[in-house]
Each structure stands twice: as C-alpha cells, then as structure tokens.
Length: 217
Length: 217
DNA sequence: GACTCATGTTAATGGCCTTTACATGAGCGC
DNA sequence: GCGCTCATGTAAAGGCCATTAACATGAGTC
Image (cartoon, rainbow over all chains, first blue to last red):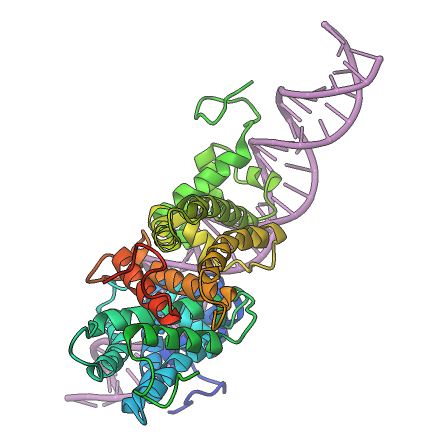
C-alpha cells in the first residue's frame, strides 16, 4: 500500500495525507500568500473532503505552525551547509551564510512567510520555538568563531554580534529579497548590499584586514 | 450636523464612516493581528451594515492599503521629528532616528503590520508607494548628511548607507521590537542593540571619533 | 473471520466577502 | 420652502470558508 507521494488514484484512505497537506500549503502560500491559503483548498488540492485535514491538524494554525517548523529545519540545514564549520576562513564562511539566508528567503518564500510573517506566536508551539532556536544557533556559533579570532581586549559579545548580523540579514531579506510581490526595488543585488554592510560592520568591530582574504579595498 | 468622531446616535447616514472604519481597522488589527481583522467586524464596530464599507473602499485590501498609507505618513512625521535636521549633531540625530523607528514598531503595531506584513504589494497603490518612499527619504536625507561630513576620498554612497541602516533597523524592529506576540525575547533592549550596531557600523565607515560628540569609547 | 480504531465522508452551523436592488436624506437650484 | 439628485446607507442573497458531529471504510490484529 504505497501510493507514495504521487497523485494516483486512491481508495477511501489517502495514505499520506499529512505530508500532502503540508506540500499543498506550501504550494498555495507560494501562489497567494499566507493569508490566501485556506484549509479547504489544501484539502481539495489533496483530493479529500474539507473535514479530512482535521484528523491531522487541530486547525488551520496548527498546519501553518507545522509548515513554519519544517521551514526552520530546512533553514537550519541550509545555514549549516553554508557555514561549513567556518572553512576556509571565517569571513568567507560568514559571507556564504548571509547569502544562504537571502537565498532561502527568495527561493522558499512560502516557508519564509510561514516562519516570519504568518503571525504565529513562537511561544505557542514548543517544537516550533526549538526549531527556530536551532536555526539561530548556527548564526551564534558562527559569531563565536568570529570573535574568538579577535584579541581578548575589547572583544565584543558573540551573542550581540550574532543578533546584529541576524537583524541586518533579516531586514534585507524581508525588505528586498523575498520571492513575492512585497519585495521592494533595489539599485543593486541584495547579496551585494549585505556583503558591503557585513564588511563595514566587521571593520567597525576591529577586524579590518588580514584576518581573512576578503574585505580589502 | 457634526457627530464629529463621536460614538453618538446617528440617522440613516453615518457622516464620518470612512474615518471611523480606518480607526476600527487599527483597533482590530491591534487586537487580533492583520489576519484577524475582518471587513464585517469593522462595519459592526462602526455601527453600520456589512455592505456599507463598500461605499468607501473597493474591498478589504483597499482599506488595509489605506491604513498602510496613513501609517507611512505617521511614520514619516515621527522620523522627521526625530531627525530634526540632524541637530545637534549627525550621530545623535541618527540615534534618535533609529529609536523612533523602533518606537513606532512598538507603539503602533497595527500601523506597522499593515505597512510591512499585510502582504500588500507596494506597487499596487501609487499613493501607498509614494508614502512609503517619503518615509525612506527621511533616512536617505539623513544618510546624505552623514556621509557629507566625511572626507571625499572613500566616501560611501549615501543610498547604500541608508539602505544598510534601514535594513538593520527594520530587522531589529521586525524580530524584537514589535508590540505583538510575534516578538522574540532579547537579552537587552532593542534600542541598545541597535545603538551598538550603529556605532560599530559607523566606525567601519571610518567615522570613528571626532565627527560628533557621541560614539566615543 | 471478527474486532477495533485511525482515517475518511457527509451534513450542518455560523461567519465572512461581495454584489445587486432598493431606501434615505443632505445639498442644491429654484 | 420645494423637489431633484446622488452619495451613502440597508436588506437580501450567493458562494466560500472553518469547524464540528455523526457516520462509513478498511488496514492491522488477534
């Protein structure tokens, strides 16, 4: 009994409804925004009755929260892959990290919307919160590596650095890099905007030149 | 014939419905988020039938866009007041500007949601777009003042600086400073986080000390 | 082979969005 | 003051959605 993920015929039971509903949600959010996505339409997309989804999610918000949680997991994977333990050097790894953040916002607008814009309180769902914190942890680890390379005198708190870079990157992603129509125009690629800001910020931290191969002018 | 803005009795005609609907929308968005706000409930709040709002707004989205436009106007006023022509010095004025941004997100979550999170395409409504650009223009003017105080050699583009600061501030506001439940916890006030980032960024620009009375360590 | 229970369906309630046809009365020319 | 007109309101209706309750199916188990 494996219809797998396919669209083939089915009997009374779907067999894979929960997964199918999540994919339907992603599809619909991508097309019409998180507000435009409806429970009933996801059911229709999956070929089941409007009541069927309630066997798998308490309500519409729980589905959205599940999508957000999965989004944070994918996000964490993408960020970790980009960071790659800070190799070959911290700065270029950070650069990849930022680009991966922007790229995620652009390539996965549905996940991104569910994660940051659907109005889900992160505290509501413990798993969602944990997944969100795991994603941030990548950035925090990276920041710790970054500041650990600095002289102990005047070394900034890694948490603060992580929050700064998160905020900056998130701001650029939200304003300029999303895949949907809410994106604003920009006279340069968002990746370049971010890289420039990052290098300026690093220089301000006292990591000007010589720590890595990037960032010279 | 002035019921003014009051809640008093009225005849067949409301007399001030458009304004009342906007205020109802703000009230409802603040209570239940932009998704929770409904056209019908705004009508009920105003004491009119569900069809009445359609005499003033094409649909629910147009009301939301109008709220967003008004939000950008209030926002522009708040930013201009904070900037105050860069007095007494550029850096402290910039500092006020950032705090005003964060404060707006915290004190006017309904406006903020409508402006940045309601999923309204800025291009849809020309007036909305213009209002949004007027707000950004304050930041851009401030950035021009900032870089104009730098030596011409290696002076960064003012537009880039404005975009950097906008993104950073917007990121902090979105993640940590909103009034609603989507706000994340932070080990320090968002204002302090922003100020620290701003000073680091300025130092990275080569505006370390001496340009103004703030930002020394 | 019968039982059980997760997973579907059907049907119903109530709310919302939006349109159409109709009602009211405020402002205006006279 | 009188009557017209039109902006601004109401009532009613259609269609969609969320959610629930009662019922149906059939996959796995003993």
